[in-house]
Length: 309
Picture 1: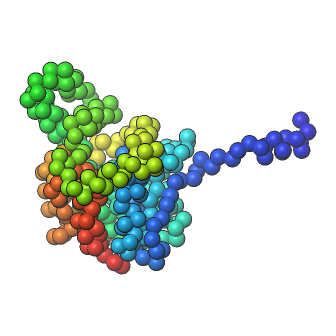
Picture 2: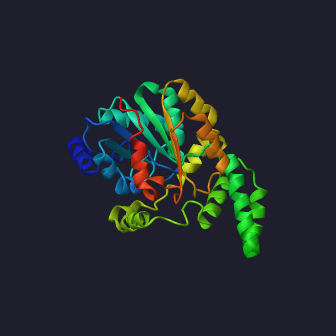
Picture 3: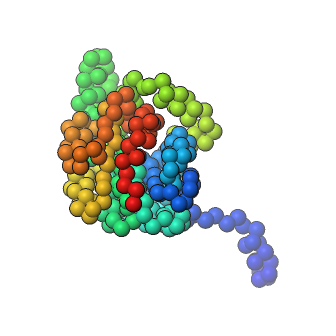
């Protein structure tokens, strides 16, 4: 083939940059930086980006959000889905926005990433804020099963009791076991508060009506949990020692949880509270897994506790 014709044809092929992450920033770059790490694995930052990030920026913060590689709007067919890859991308996002040090807001699974990054790069972390983050998932799975069994027995739901029995026969460290536990938790409303405030209800109504949430709000990337499980066995992690290590590196750690978040036993929140300095732990009523929507005003108040330096 004529080389000039070949070059012309190549120019007509659309270029897809698989390495590009979806990122967005809100507020004044001169203000203290907050990097939001979304949950999952397999989810995205849409709910926080729409409901909370712009308002948090108005409180005097420079708020950066992004979807992890291969998740949500950060399409990458070559994503590894590993903690090491996620940490490298976190560093790249901070560099992209010329941020040398940031508060890490780790929601759910994002809390694991925040702690891992803070242990490795304490000089880049102003604080870690654990927002409904898992502390011992294997214990949490047993907690979910026990709650579901009580619910199904009360309803005389023999079908789901049978499925629960089959679940308990699975290998507890398998991804299938974790997936079914989360499925039963979702089915029984463990993520949500049964008694949301009127303000929270208004926020949820506005959120689900937002076009970006309609497109991405419930979009899940199935490869992500499989990859993080394969590469890092994240469902077997216990976070208490990691929290101690981060604190030893002089990085402040905060915990923000909902009393109605039934994914985790109350004893986990109590253990975390005992680990953290006084005033660094908050657990709110009428609040489920999505703290920054369920109790947004209290969430903003908690942000005022973060160190300013």
